[in-house]
Amino acid sequence: MNPMTPLPTPARPGAASQVPAVIGPADAPAALGTRRVLRNTYALLSLTLLFSALVAAASVALQWPAPGLLLTLGGYFGLLFAVYKFKNSGWALPAVFALTGFMGYSLGPVLAKSLALPGGAQVVTLALAATGATFLALSAWVLTTRRDFSFMGGFLFAGMVIALLAGLAAVFLQMPALGLAVAAMVALLSAGLILFETSRIVNGGETNYVLATVGLYVSIFNLFTSLLSLFGFGSSDD
Image (cartoon, rainbow, N blue to C red; front, side, top):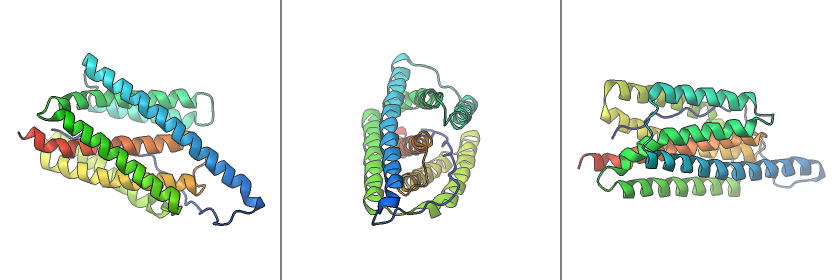
């Protein structure tokens, strides 16, 4: 089973400062703003994940053709640019749903290929469950401890660039072993990015819930596809 080339997560410049343990009157507006961003982010993230899953399911059911590597990367970067361009306007939400819907469409053929393998349904279910459990556990940890993981930003961004280049090499050179190593690397980096993105929201480093949603969505998407490749590797050899 060929792993899906990882999609780079948007970089988040700057370090986030932690919210004080004791919030005084002067800090109350900032705390309320942080809670509002967090609430809006998780609400929009839930909707985009559901929409993306519906598009992926339709892609599998209707047997839509795979978009191909160039179209996938072009569509991703083009729609991501649109999200950043319209992040503070009324076009932000349509851009986000266009991006996540397109990514759901690109995921459909990958799911169809996985489901066609021996035990494919169990592989997809296991990857989905592991992704959900990982996201919930990491998010709960950050929300509870309010740890600041902004120091990981540069390392994670550099790691995703390396993973992207290695993933492209695995596709063009037809190297399954390299693809498997890239999938494991992307899974670890995606977990780190979930910590990083959630920490930025909790500690006030991210004030735009649209960008926060996209960052978390891409991390979850990459985590799921990499786990799907790892869990499906054994099935593809049967």
